[in-house]
Length: 466
Image (cartoon, rainbow, N blue to C red; front, side):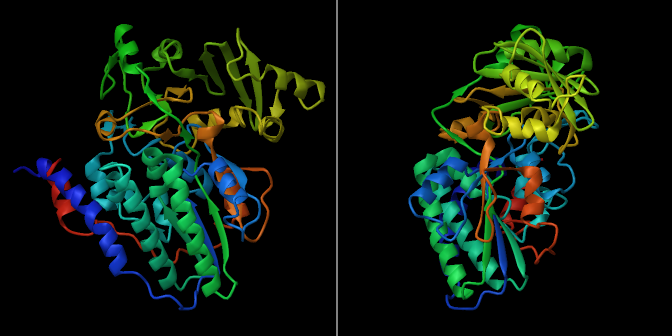
């Protein structure tokens, strides 16, 4: 039997033995906690979910939660890069288009070989991160697989934290995102209730001295999902969806995960045509493309607009439409005297004026989506409406999505931030969290994650699939 056929069996076995391993390694209660501050990252937990739990009496040690405004696209890689201030990620997701090599990169083999997944990435910042292979396992036997892995992840984190001698400990729980995707709000809330009890234990063990801060990198929108037929539309229009760019008809459309946005790569002369085509596909909210060094064009069913940047100032121009529904806000900014003679307003003004808008802080986030946080930057970015997604054909076989993220709208954008030591206000941006949580004023405690997986079978299989 080939290793390729053995891989699903291996993953299923992992799902079964991880909870047992976590139970065997269950730490002894009662030991004094060394870390004075815990920062816990919960991947993909929406603000509204945390707010609901707080209103029910959970997380009572914390101040009021704030909305954490993610990047655009609202995906883990760019979001965590923005928050932590680490080096740019190769791609928007772990499966990405490498412009230098002109081919798709990042595979399941890389995830099983944990070194490539963690080393040299933002994940090295964390004092605890689950072994690389776990993220893929949550999609097997869902939602039960995701539930089991989330509990195992929490147990391993607890063990790592209690063993740490560092004054500040940063942990990352990735299975919360899988729980939202596969289990929906019910299963995610159940996990968070368990987390609340654990945090109470840790604070008690520290004699009340432990300070805790938590945040998520983006939100998740709970609903039933339909797949956007973007590839079909491109082919009908004469474009070739390929793995390498050959000519102006070539379009590379990486499909990883099952998310609410897509990043497309093509030749510069094809950007506008591809964006116009994508904007007309059912389920698409808008498509954007770079039209100049400091300009971005946006197209939607509401027409066309132009985004302009001048240093740290931004301008929104109606070019035959209002895709972001910002005409009224632009007029308000102008009438209040906050706009210069050329129609530009500061980044801070746009943030304050749009923080409760359906598209929060859109101009900065869209420009950053094309210019920051990733090395291989897209030519066209498509944001889908709530309830629509596009992604991996393989995952779609295993997964019935109950929530996802990636688009510009609030449910998929808004994570949360919460602290026991300070209030954070009504909303914060990812770029603010590093300073607010003093993430740059600590040393890594010592990584507590595996680069290989829990046994040698994973690396062996990964090598065989190359």
